[in-house]
Structures are given as structure tokens and as C-alpha cells.
Length: 243
Image (cartoon, rainbow, N blue to C red; front, side, top):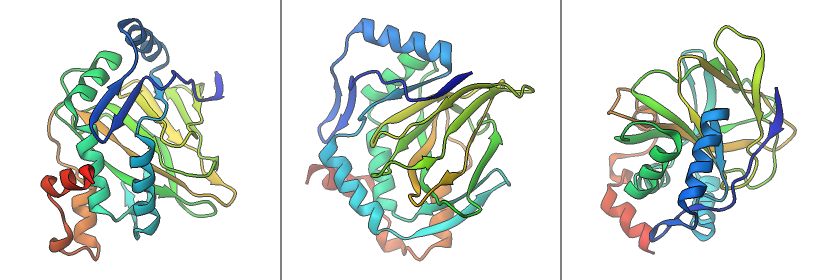
């Protein structure tokens, strides 16, 4: 078993206000793909431009949250900020970035990204138990750390279906670092409880080969106090990105 780690690959890929910045080479991409094929995951450090990330973090800090549970597998507080979520959709929908994800992971053509911004609180019933992400046309799992302070616990564990042996324990604690993980029938994963006083905040979701049925934020908007007038379209997101 690999002990808790966050294998860093240098700041080769970054999503900025003007699009994708890639400072690597074809050899770097081959190395990332080799690592992903071997370990089933990689970490991309500092994926979001620092100034843009700072603005996003301020919005998340001020946003309300709604406790949600999914099929007994996940219980967490989902951040109720449609504009911030739509900005992430815009960034992760940049075609050049999606093509890099395809080259690194070997997945088929990406149709879209879908997920949620969430928080796991310590000393609570928040949980992410053993499960596989195989459903709803998912190909690659994505998790972006949005916790300004280093948190304790919250380790990602990966194992094979039907086995108790832990393949990897991953501590993705770098602010703005993103994890890509393979979605496969043979792979199960969970997140250990968060400890101490600092909650863990992240954007989690999936790159998918086709539109699916589950939309966490549509469900959240129905449950929350957000009025239709506050739900923004992509023109609004683009304007916010330019400011």
C-alpha cells in the first residue's frame, strides 16, 4: 500500500481568466499518463489561477450551505452558490483543458462536467463511505481542494472491488490542487472522516461522456432559498470572469 501522499507534478497546467495555460511538453503529458495508468489517479497542483481562486474562496466563505445525503453513501454540506459553481463549470468546460484530461487519462471525448461544491465537517455525521462512481456516464472523477487551511483526516482511500487491501491513501491538502481519478467497476474509494477543527471544502464531480440524469445543484436550488432571479446564465459567468 502507498502511504498518504500527494504526488506533485509541478504546475504544468493552470486554468486562468484568459483560458488554459500549459507550460509542459509532450514528454510531460506522457509521464502524467503513465502515472495515471499505474496509480489510477494523479494530482495537478495549483490548477486554478491564484487571483481567481482567491475571489472564488471569498464567495464560498460567505455562501450558505445545505446538508444533503445521497443513497446512504455520502452525507455532506453542499455550498449554495450557483454563480461560483457555474464559474467552475465554465473553467472545467474549456475545450483545451478537456483535451488534456483526455490525453492524460485515456478517456473518450468529454461531453461535460457535473458535480458540486461541498464541505465535510469534523465531529459530525458527514461521511463518504466505500463506493464506486460507475454510473451516469462518468469517466473520470475530479476533486479540487478549496480548504485555505490544512485540514486533518479526510484522506482518500482506493481499493479494488472485493479486496480489503488499500491500494493508495491520498492526502490532497494543497490549496487549489486537483485530483483526477479513474472511474472503473474494479475500483472503490472512500474519504475518511475529517478530524480537528478545520472542515474540508472541495469541488467534486465527474467528467462524463454524455449528459446524465443526476444534477446536484438543480436539486439544491429546488431545496434552497435561491430564487430564479439569482440563478445566472453563462453570459453572466463570462462577465464575472472578465472583471
